[in-house]
Amino acid sequence: GQQLNQSPQSMFIQEGEDVSMNCTSSSIFNTWLWYKQEPGEGPVLLIALYKAGELTSNGRLTAQFGITRKDSFLNISASIPSDVGIYFCAGVGGSEKLVFGKGTKLTVNP
Amino acid sequence: GAVVSQHPSRVICKSGTSVKIECRSLDFQATTMFWYRQFPKQSLMLMATSNEGSKATYEQGVEKDKFLINHASLTLSTLTVTSAHPEDSSFYICSARGNWNIATKEKLFFGSGTQLSVL
Image (cartoon, rainbow over all chains, first blue to last red):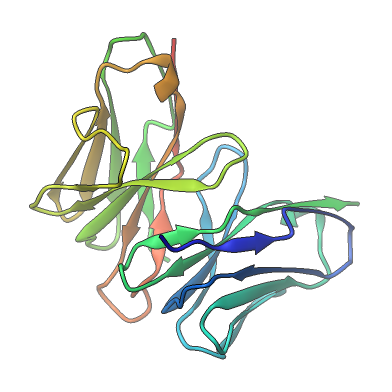
């Protein structure tokens, strides 16, 4: 089945630093979604991408849908302590099912 | 944005009992809802796809008689864990897909999850 490779698995950064994480796949996806999950909570949608090459921002977050439709990245600029959590990429392919990456755990040191 | 409400948020039950988890779309109609299971420090694993008015579609390896899904209306899907055992302890999360306008198309909104602990 379709799989997503998300990296890095975890990140430890200082407050104010920029963060970048990405997802790649051997399969083509029609939609890429980025979520943030905090302990004991469901994932919260951050950004949705629908077209190859699309670049979308949500505040300090920016995400892009790769031209090949097989990858996507998420950048967080000027990180703050409340950015901590697990970030998941997710892709929607031909089956219309959402496939999740394994997540990137972000720790921000004040 | 679209809101998905999931209840209860936490449940502790005895082995052998059944537990029902509700998932409601509060401000949109969801013809399709999804149920996921998440183990600690793991990603979300799709268990089944729930379609309003028809039988749920289960992923490979998920017992349909164990995890009963009912999607009786466009705003409510329920997951019942029958005869629960300790190995069923997990974080269960529902999600709903909004197709009612272009702003919600293809976006998947999640409930806040249910932590099930079976003693």
